[in-house]
Image 1 (tube, rainbow, N blue to C red):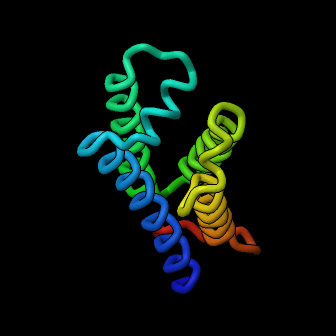
Image 2 (tube, rainbow, N blue to C red):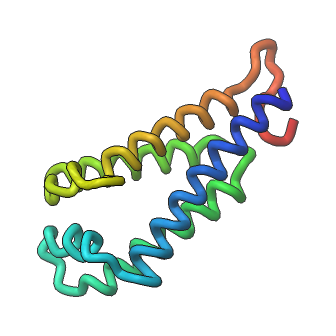
Length: 134
């Protein structure tokens, strides 16, 4: 059980760091050209405001992943958001998918972390919990 807890924590910390970095650095601290491009592709006028809100949402997701460890729903929400954002990029700014360190590679790895966390936190056989509190 201790090994599963370590895998679960590693997956959650990895996801949290990803959301924290992507919410803070390219959106709040230094609004990147790619972020502006992705937002503008939707025809939204207030690019800076949208970037700020998206950055705050990603930071909140990072905190939820670390704070709500007794339940697996943050992993599901993370996976849905990552898949949705990847689909959004593919539809609205597909040129970004061929850049170095692009949304495809980042989101696929993050989706793998969601799956690792999901498996590591699955209830153990025999009715015992495999949650973080064990």
